[in-house]
Amino acid sequence: MDRRVAIVGIGQTRYETGKTESLDEIAFEAASKALADAGITRDEVDNVVIAASDQLDGRPISSMTLACPAGGYLKDEVKASDDGTLAVVLACLRLLSGVFHTSLVVSWCKCSEVPTAKVTNLSFDPFFHRDLGLNHINALSFQVNSYLSRYPISEWVPAKIVVKNRANAMGNPYAHLVEEVSLEEVVQSPIVCPPLRQLHLPLECDGACALVLTTRERVRLTTQKPVWISGLGWAMDSYYLGERDLHQLSSVAKAARQAYQRAGIKKPIDEIDVAEINELSAYHEIMAYEALDFCTPGEGYKLVEEGSTELTGKIPVNPSGGALAASPLFAAGLVRIAEAALQVRGDAGERQVTGVRTALAASCYGICAQGSSVFILSQES
Amino acid sequence: MMKEKRELVSVPGKWDISFNYAAGKTVSHFLAQIRDNGRILGMKCAKCHRVMVPPRSFCERCFVPAEDWVELGDEGVVEAFTIVHDVFEGSPPPPYAIAYVKLDGADTALANFVDGLDLSDISEATQRLKIGARVKVEFASRREGRITDFKYRIIG
Ligand SMILES: [Zn+2]
Image 1 (cartoon, chains in turn blue, cyan):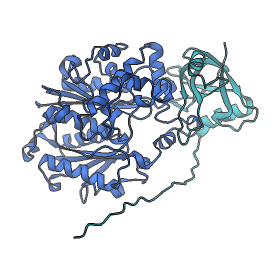
Image 2: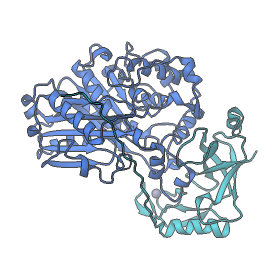
Image 3: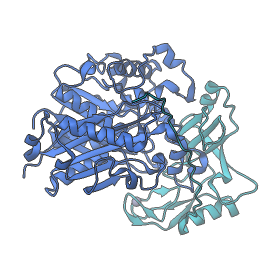
Image 4: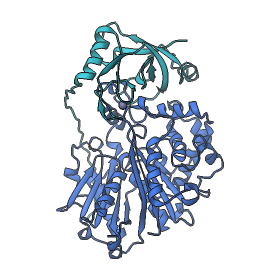
């Protein structure tokens, strides 16, 4: 058996706030677009892997109502109650097992239907943390303050990230937030938890994303240019923030090392042409540069100042606009893989980076990036 | 077919479910010691010798059971902090400050609210509440065996 998996279909809804379609309608939309993009029908799919949050969906075991809208009718279906990228990990493993041949991966989230921070507060344990009112946003500044205490960078550096990602999103027809912002607007935006301001944070919204994955043997049955998953890694840090090295993204670094090793990447900044990163904040994008070994720890600001991660830079990051322009929370990581795959195919339209052969997609999930997964996508198998 | 204006409906929902979370022997003892004696205990791993707080009945790194209680000091050092200025449903009304503090004798940091800071002035607050600042544990006079039975206060 040839141990390679390719992305052969990509489907995305528009990412916007207050979508009036129901959850099953957006799952269906993304899944059918992915099948159409692959040039296959649901009949060619032998398993469906979905990823979503029951609490954010407001439906315990949401796959009960959503498996079939996602393409699972009378098929093998499994769900990861976790980040969308983990559905891709799971699908890859299933395909590599030889038991399955073509997977439909679907993830969704409608942030506008629920106070997301109230939900993530409930993710904390009831004994030590929940009573403190912690959530996925106010906990981020533990990390940012820890980073700044070690590497005191100027507030203009993360502001540049926001300006970059917002400007990039102008070329992304799926990103609902198509307003550019200035550096001044970023540093003057309302304070959330210092130093984090409103514009430093992801714009939570609604949307669904789907991919069709298949094996080398089945690629010829699709009409799409295959994008090969040449490396992947995933890792989990401790839940207890008081036990973690908060000034760095340890899970990202661990996942990246695995992905680079599998893909044979030695010098990421020279070998990767474009990256899509699920940035938990503008500061986290800088921390991710370091964890992904684009630069040494503490030097992320230099890449920003040199413009290396801008659309025309050495290693453009988030040409789609990233999570700062549109984040359907649990699906936001899968969107990064979809966007990186479009870059490799040369199908990214206005946001296309020239000459992409190898792309990286990274997701951070859980409180303060407890978990991370990293994918290397390439044209060649 | 005649064109008609279609109405879009959304239906409200609310989860109202009660839970009873068993704390286990270790966490129960920790919370009871806070309530009854105003003492904060850590749990030492016999293998890596880390003193963990919150305490657990095992060390997740060495993956062995842990059972050596260690009494921690009532002072410590700020390892990380957040000062919250925005309103979040399910969280206290802002502003409030939360710090992870490595109590004297512990190897991990424990989170709790920080009291006695003027949080309306951000630069003033971050001058005092910073990584490395020393804090003291202040217990409430009426305690109920919850983490909120104490707060931190910056000293020096
Ligand atoms: Zn240990």
